[in-house]
Amino acid sequence: MTSMRRALSLHARQLIAASLGLIAFLGLTGVALDQAFRSTLVDTMEMRMARYADVFWNELEFDRKGRLIVKDIDNLPDARFNNYRSGLYAQIQTARGDWQSESVALFSLPELPDAGKVQAPELSGPLQLPVGEDSSIGAYRYTATAEFETRKGPVVATLRIYEGEQEIFRQVAGFRRSLWAYLGIAGALLTLVQVFILRWSLQPLRGLEHELSALQEGRVQRLGRQYPTELHPIANSINALIDSERGNLELSRNTLADLAHSLKTPLAVLQSQLENHADPDRFREEVYGQIQRMNDIVSYQLSRAARSGHALYSAPIGILPHAESIVSSLEKIYRSKGVLCEFEIDPKSQFSGELGDLQELLGNFLENAFKWARQRVLLTVRPLYEPAAKRPGLFLCIEDDGAGIAPEDISKILQRGVRGDERVQGHGIGMAIVQDIIQSYGGQLAVDRSAELGGARFTITLPCLS
Image (cartoon, rainbow, N blue to C red; front, side, top):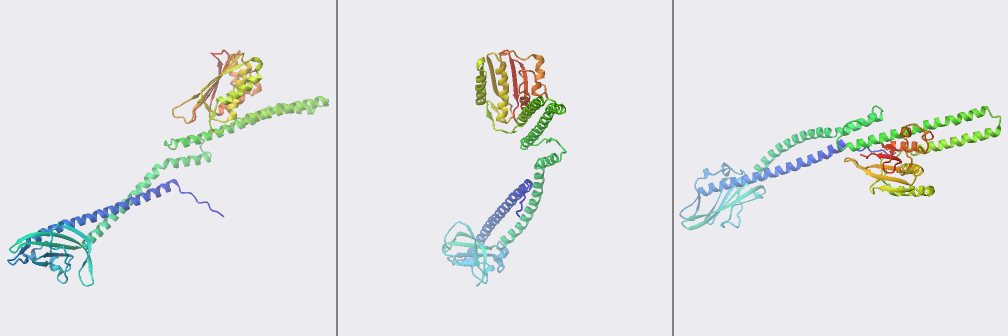
């Protein structure tokens, strides 16, 4: 039995991602600050040792024999130089004698081969400094040289100051405790702010979720909130789907109601014939006629139902090829009349819907035009644009040079709910179907007189899709 893993919510995903980013940022910040503090301590140590060196040079003398003398051993720059293993050690080497601070009384600092050479001050380390037979400590070494004039000639003195890492370790440890404590507090506060910001930023999604739940429960009919720019197309698409499905449902109900209403008359006739069937031949003929009529009614209503719905986001269909195909067939049917159909079709014109709907629209209107035209039919098609629309709308105009439609009959042709066989003779063929198609696309149909050809003009306007 397989179990479905529930996907993480957007809130959880963003919180995890932001938390990981925050942890990485605070971690890298802590490491950078720790290194910066340690570098600052080392720089401070170097400056402190340089000051120690200046004091040593002031206390350094040579006797008449050129031997090294430290004048005032109690006036050393730091008392730790006089305390055994205090962590601060000094060593002076010259060609006329050496000196070491009291802090190295029981062990000797290493002699380096470069003693006696004038060199620039240098801090090196950390290195291991032996402070006994089996022990050593980590320390930094500051090396400085100075040249002195004595009675025996010039002497180069090399001063080396060693300071253990313990003080740096102690300060770094204290700094780290404070640093990570403050960074932890800052991380907790930033996490709380982050949670608040995420809840605020995702509030529109929660509102959409609640409104969809209300829609499923039937408490609302459409999505009515104002959503941000990113969610606005989604809300519009959902509303469009809802409207489309409800429109299709309403059309199906209307078709069934029309079918039931249409079948009442032939059923009533059949019932009356069952009560009076003295003439078998006449009874058979009447039954056959009513059955044929019911078959025609069912075929007609099913045709309307099949063309009532349409895909909301169908691929755009070019107008010109289908118009040419329909006109070619009509020219063969009405060859004896010699009707000429002219096109004024913008090449960019496209129908955003189903092919059957386009063929039904063009076929019905063009067939009416061919039927009532004397010699000319004009088909005009061009796209309609709106600034924020995703797909352009469509303008179709079919005109003929026939007798036209009387103004008092136009309202009857456009009347809703009238069946096809109840329309005005001539221009009413298929009008119920095409009006349902136009209505399903949210379009409009207008009928008037053609200013150019003088006959009837049918104008269909289909809106843009947002």
